[in-house]
Every structure is written in structure tokens, then in C-alpha cells.
Image (tube, rainbow over all chains, first blue to last red; front, side):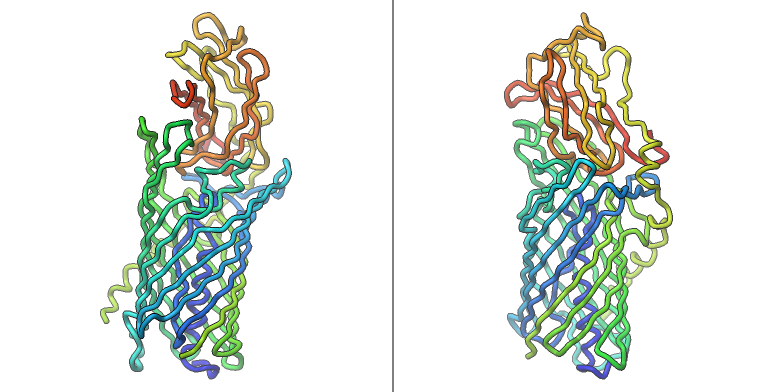
Length: 316
Length: 163
């Protein structure tokens, strides 16, 4: 274990970086995200996290065939500033809230256009279901959670701007549930996260004149496998993570007609992280996430994301 | 704690990653532009058919669709029995609404701007294909807020293997 700040060093930083999964969206065009909430995983009563990220769409993966990388004359960049808080409400229960501010910019031969909006809000209830009471070589520390995602920004079905630059939000209420497991040995740490989510059916009035467009996104799931190594001579951790995100095809229909369900989506977030634990109260993370490294990908955009995270914790 | 509950997500991660990496298998947008056919497949008689209204319509690109910029097109209507793709053109008695739809993704794109140029001829602008793949060009005939008829044609904007 790192001699810096005790055995929770790796665990703290390993989970801070997991939240960066939120910045690498599944299908950037449509506001789809993974659902990794920021949880209190150390011996803290509450924490505040500020994250800034910039994500560029590199290409697109169709339903079949190879990916198509976009030309240099096109640029689609999403910048996100996310404020997240979590606090203990009892010995093992905690609640959290995430508020993102998102700016999306689309540049082409035609010119440049941008839109800024509050992103989808997220509220989380979590429980330390498998606490670590004593040493075990294999048994991890585990948390379970339930999150609700509230749509705040315009979705692809509500866009009014050329190039759909204002399609920032998912457009749907979503509930997700999952679990997080953390384990560290000396300088190494491993984390495993899994969640499943369901987005509720919604109609968009006026999309097709007076007829309502009904959209049912349905189920999806994601998982994160992360590992990291903490330097013995400095409070620094180097980590890697892999995260597949799978969403079922959407059912869409008019009031008077039935559509064929769309195809499912699959994308892989692969990432590297460099973390610095400045003190038991402060930490910072620089992260890179790439959706082109691993496959197969299907029916999605492909992005590369740079992110920075600053966290303040209040120990018990 | 039963660690076997960790097996499912771990197994899914490990097995699902054994696939084609987009970084190693991709085309550039310029190559996709050359290989794709962006003209709607047309019959010589009636590309977009509106049997209830007795009309036909054609969709001709003025600025070809790419992923780089918005496209524009001309939409022309004629009487199905008395006219032809070359005219004479007639104005639909109902309002028209063209839009894009991507069946595989289950969504469309931003609104298309419609300007009437001459009788039966409309200029369509700000046609944005926000990603490559299989799309449909759709035209609705509306009376007030009610959709009377709709016609569509497939169009592909992708790399090798599609047309």
C-alpha cells in the first residue's frame, strides 16, 4: 500500500476516476451517458467534486460496416462543467446530487454554431452494502446505489438549431441501479462497477406537426473494470479503465403509426488516469477517455475526452 | 460475501472487448464521400408518390449532402396523371414538411428550412445529416396540424459497403 495517507489511497482515487465515465457519452448526438454516480468511498462525511471536460467526436460507427472518421473540416466538441456533491445521512447511507453545465459547439465549412445549457440532473441514494470491517485478501468493499436522471436540456427530438447543436440532453427520465466494488493490495487497486438503467417512454409534441412522436429508449447497461498502481515515493496513482455501454434499440411511433425499433448501441470507453492525492482532504485527477480503442462498437458516435477533476473531502 | 455476483459484469467486460477496434478499422470521411451514393433512388415517373393527393414529387440536391456542412435541395411537385418530372409543376393544396429520419438510431435531425420559389418548386436548406449511415428522406403533406400523407425514400451516407 502507498505509505501516503493510509490504505484508502488507491480506493479513493480509483473511484474518483470512475466518475469520468460520465463525460464520454454513448452516442454524443443523442445525449446518452453511462450512469456512474460520485459516491463517498472513503472515511468521509461529505465531498464536493468539480469536473471539467472536453469531448470531441472523432467519427461515427454505423449499424454495419467500418467506422467513418470525420474530416478536419468538421468539429463537434462538447465541454462539460460538472458540480457534484455527496454526503452521509447515516453510518452506511449516503445521498448525492450532480449538476452539469454543458456547451456544445459544431464547426463546419458552413461556419460555427454553439449552444450552452444546464445538463441533465442526477440524484443518487447509495448504501455501503459490503463494508470492510477487517482485513481480507480478497473480499472487496462494496456499495449499491439507485440514481434518477432528470432531463433538463433539449434532446435530439427537440432540436431547433442547424446541425442539432442544441441537442445536449438525453430527453428522458432514467432510473439506474448498480454496484461498485473496490479492493487494494499494497500499491495496486482494482475496481469493478456495474449498472443497469431504464429510460421511460416520452412523447414529443409537435415533432411531426400535431402528431406526437413517442419514443421508448428502454433498457441499457454498463460496467467498468479499473485498475491502478500507486507510486511508493509520491501520492500519485496511474490507472486504466474499460467500460462497455450497451443500450437497446429505441421504439418510436406516431400516434397513428408504428415504427420499426431502431438498432441497439454499443460503445467502449477506454481510459487512462493520473491522480494526485494532495492531502486527505484534496485530490485531483487528469483523465483521458477514448472510444476508438476497443470494439466492437455499433450504431454510435466515437469520441475522445480529456477531463480534469478536483475533489474536496471532509474526513470523519 | 458471495464473490460470484462479480462474475457476470466481469465476464461481460472481458468477452465483449474481443472485437474490431474502430481505431484499427475505419475509413476517412473523404473516402466515404466518394463511395456513397447520395442521390435518392428514383423511378423516372414518380419518386415520391402521394396517391391521395394525386401528386408526385422529386428531390434533387443543389448542395450534395456531406458530414461537413448542411445540404440543400430542390423539391418539385407535379400532377401524377397529367405532369412529369420535367413539369408542369403544381403547388400542393396542403402544406409540406420535409424531414430526415435515421431508422437505426431512432431519431431525426434539425428542422429543414423550406422556401417556396415558384409554383410547385421548393428550396430546402439546412439539411444536416449529423452522422453517417442509412437515413430516409421524408415528405409530409399536411392540412393544418393533420398529416394527410407521407412518402419517403432511403438515402445512404456512409463508407464502403453501402449505397
